[in-house]
Length: 74
Image 1 (cartoon, rainbow, N blue to C red):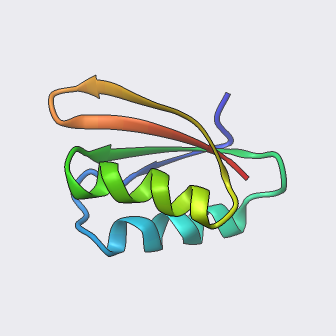
Image 2: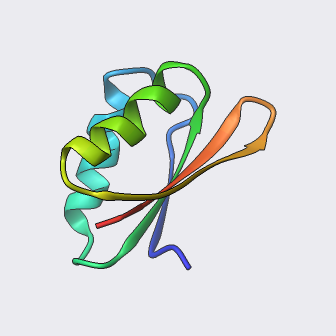
């Protein structure tokens, strides 16, 4: 169960990961952030950047249309 859901489907890089990182910083260790984002650059960059920052990317899944869900554990 996600601690917080962040919808950045209307955002563009580099704001997609900036907003994701801000939300992750607000969470406690072990909390889970669900990020809804569009395919393309955000889908490529957010999971990769989260891993590079030391977060655990639990899943990347297609929701509908161009929307995907990335689940990240802090």
